[in-house]
Length: 117
Image (cartoon, rainbow, N blue to C red; front, side):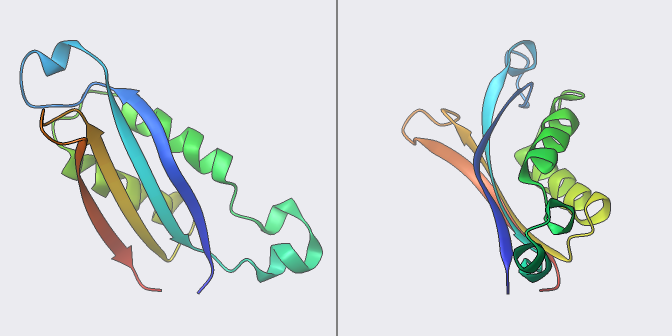
C-alpha cells in the first residue's frame, strides 16, 4: 500500500477541558498516514495526480483552529473525517499528541485508524 505521510504538523489552538486551557493556545502535533496510490503521480510526474500534503496541512490547520475543542479524541476524529471525505482518502491513521499536558511526560496522545486500506 502506498502512503502519503505528514509528520509533526504543529497546530496552535485552544484545546482542553480546564477553564485555564480555554484561555490560551496550546500546541498539538499531528502525524498522518494516508493511503494513496502514488503510481499515477510518479509515472506522469504530474502534481494533479498527487495528494498535496500542503493542501491537507492547511485544511487541517483551519479546521482545528476554527473553534475551541475540549478533547484530542475529537480532534483525531475530525481529522480522519476531513481527510477521507474532502480528499477521497480510503484509509487514514491519525496520531494527535499534546506536548506538556502531563508534567512527567513529554507528550500524551491518541491514535486512530479509519477506513479500509
